Image (tube, rainbow, N blue to C red):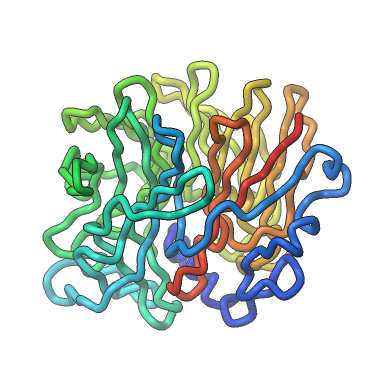
Length: 383
């Protein structure tokens, strides 16, 4: 099994045909209002409640609340059929070759407090792996705000993804949903190689996953090459840490900032080895240390107002392949004590805190057919 984020997710192709809902009669792994209670762990039942906040999403990924109080969701989109074979270096089989689309598929959605979705922009590329790996889709990886300005990071663009002429990049979303280039990440990675790129599973354009705003800069993590970078609003790119240099190919995915340091969680390679993921602390100077181990398939990381860490795990690791209905959220306190507060999630991909103190989670973010089955779940923590 290949070991980058998209191909790691492409292991989901093995499970899509057999998606089992975490709740009764939820089609293709969707959560239904009737089955919500089964997601809450017994020890957390008095405090935690789960509800479906929004539906109709196309491979939902990173999500953030804007200054207007609405939720903005990056969506992988619907993929595409355009091939760039013979034009540039391709991703090797069975992950590649990719096919893609230039715009009209990848999109960003805006969700109001009642869960009603509208489209901010659909002028973004989307791409998919080879049919041998289920034609799994990537497009917009994440969103973030600096002031009132919305930024997006592309994960599924670039010639190696079947989208020549539109590289992976940080974009500024202007009035009318028009994307404007801030920084070209495909060019950056090609001219600034990391120390230990994956030998047999290399993505020339990268597969950017998470992005956060800190002050007037954006910080993004890339899983395939293995790095954390800073992107300024005038387009300067600075590598904070070459994670591959000290950790090897661990597929870093989630990033958060807390008490002046960055914290990065990793998906790790496939097949899944239970307990093989971890949380790294990365100082602003780029020093990387492991602070928490024994986790599995980490795709989201957040801190609450009490300095407790929340870790989103895509799959339990009881099976070597990603398994729908086994995703979970752990809460880790100051002493390192762990509590599973929610389980039974189906292929979750990201989470964020809302202004109400609730967690919002992208569910069915990978693997489900691109017919709008993706969801956002709202998790009220109680205390």
